Length: 500
Image 1: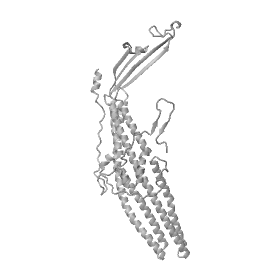
Image 2: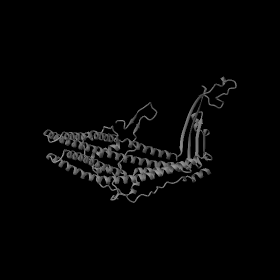
Image 3: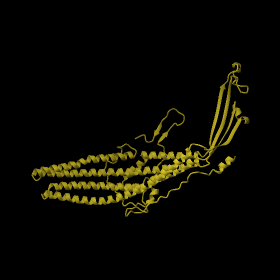
Image 4: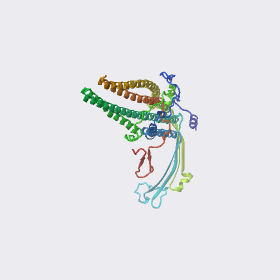
């Protein structure tokens, strides 16, 4: 009884460090000049690109992406692990019943010196059979004196948080990848259209040159140069077609469908989406709460801290209560008799005396793992800050570059018009026309790529700030639905993603 009293008094005791959220210093503001410190508008940031097709693809990807389904399964696993850990705090009770019928040897036929298995006190039937019936309950309860099981529950609770943040991180990456690949696909479409327009224009120049050659006002070299330049421009188109197809295939797979599933949907070209700029970036401290990868690292750090307590509790004595009540008889009617009922109840004390240092080493392992998770958390914060700074710088510089390219494109367009006019009047050489056309195509193509890059930087900035999917995700829906789970002949399962 004294042992039970001590156990009750120590019921609220727990060893190991208690977790406290670390306070990490962050810069007061972003280094870029002119960065708006207003809180960033992260919910559904992709809708500000004003492209209904992109909005549709994001929703379809969240519903069908296999990485999201895997992360959802990890959420279910973490929640089940938590319930399993809670179960260790409660007593366990098991029932056991048995019935046995046996035939014993006849006493008259027993060999000399051989015992009579029935015995004078056995209830043996006229046919030489005897029965034995037993029923009982066994119960056990480990008293969590030093909090090993409570630390396990604490670690499992942090595990649920970590799985939720992992799902958010997967969704953030998914939304960004869908948006990036969609913008790339539209960019390739625009560049393909530009190459075709330019090639047609250069074909017209070739036709004029051929006519001038026939009239004796142009040379064969001029015709060859015009033909070669048009062919060179047209040769770019297959390469761009390949890149466009790859972007469409990636988008299809991101939505959980075969690579060519979105070919028809995206076949009609649409303009490259244009974001509304600038993007408010807030302050660096916002990253600690907004980025799911940072929150995931912090939850893993908390979980590893709780596991130190689990390891340390093994260094201390453990007490468990065990008991049973049973009844037995040679007939069913005997089971209820007081004389056939037996019971036992008592505590068991286990004290670790010598284990070769294994338990202490387990504590040191848990502490080292905690330190690794703390360093991983610090790394995730620094990486997040770097991602935002990189995106801010890249977006600002690309916008400046795009303005310069726009000026360059306007100038080269004027140069093409002037050189063609001068060439027709005989005041300029054909080389000036070819150079101007080549420069104009290069500037227009670079401007389209810059516009794609601006949108890509916009997407990267929203991802770096922690913007992702903010809608509902049914993380409790299983991917594999089992049927006929009881005892039965071999059955079948249903796969939600079986039909591609």
